[in-house]
Image (cartoon, rainbow, N blue to C red; front, side, top):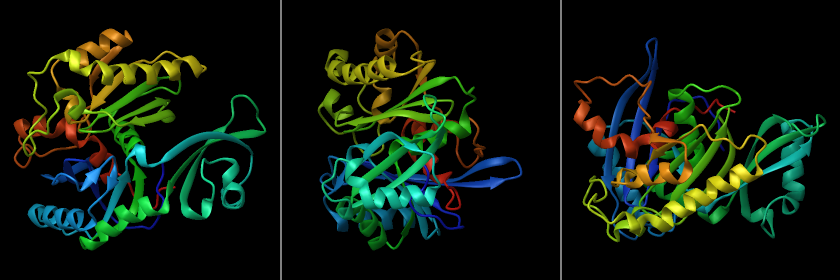
Length: 335
């Protein structure tokens, strides 16, 4: 999904989770994308709850501290809303220009979005291309969120003395990281599953473009029942039976996609998020889905200086880093 704001400047990726906030900078060079900076700090409980900002000042303090500790001088950031805070809808429209579609959605948004008054909503869209069912129509992804939710994130980050220049959605930040790191053909269907502390996000891509997204309020906490210490992975010594509800929701999400898609076969599932590393999660999911399930490597094609980022450190942050990498790869001139 492309940005909700566009300008031509370099930006840092700021990934705000319910228990960690991550900062990523990536520099484009003649050798490709280079990881310039990665750091993360814990968030106090209660700052983010159910994907919403409950304590703007607390988040602002965390943003300021993270930038100070990392020595990051960037003033502009790309941030993402959690999927549970937005509505993502795929719809068909008669072919028209972007400006015409924006006017249509502004005037008649209630017909396409589950809100009584679109004046209280921020929305954006991305035209996927011609509909496979009708050459006179086009497929469009629409993303919308209530203004108070958007303002909660934006204002808290601004209080932390940074400006949100790109506002994305977590599922599409994962998509950006995938596009940079993995090969795919137009007909390939891959699923990205990010299991965070309290929210799990599923994004099914066909030919690298989102075909289905879903986020639901389950994650590592629903499996372990407690929050790990700062920067630590979720406890591995848990009964995998505790993960059954979470795994069942992931399976149902992908089954729904397969039952409604023209090409239902999922080539592979890529797991990320701190809770994805809980022992038995990957194996159990592979058994349920009967397809390849592996861990998403957001640094597969990102140059990482081993002196600055030793391999043990990279192994520690790999599962956490995918959304932040996707955000750091965003550029405000993108549309």
